[in-house]
Length: 111
Image 1 (tube, rainbow, N blue to C red):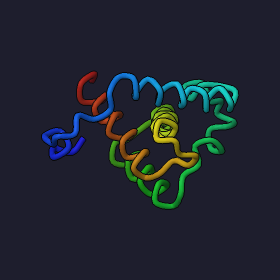
Image 2: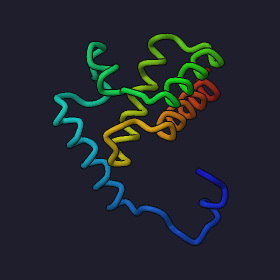
Image 3: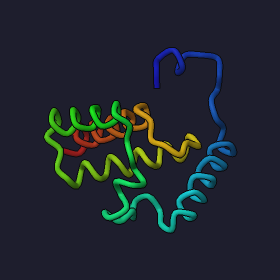
Image 4: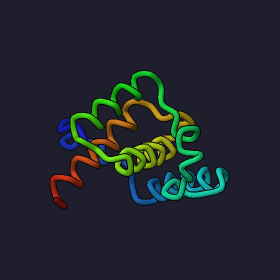
């Protein structure tokens, strides 16, 4: 989250609003037939399609961070969840960037 947003006067989303967003995202996932964490590899590329900018971003992350195929797939699933929470059918570069950041944090704190 940008520093200016943290320091701003807007208190952000409350618990009730966040709950609604999560419930809506889970509803989308149920309509697909499975939750994002359980997306079968045969469906991953279809459900987590990226535009050209997203493809470049993910390729750069995989190369720079030395990510495994498993980590690549997990990033796609997390990006799909972030897009769902944002009520977007497609994964945007900002969703992918956020997912990559979470992966970076995982590596920083758990390795």
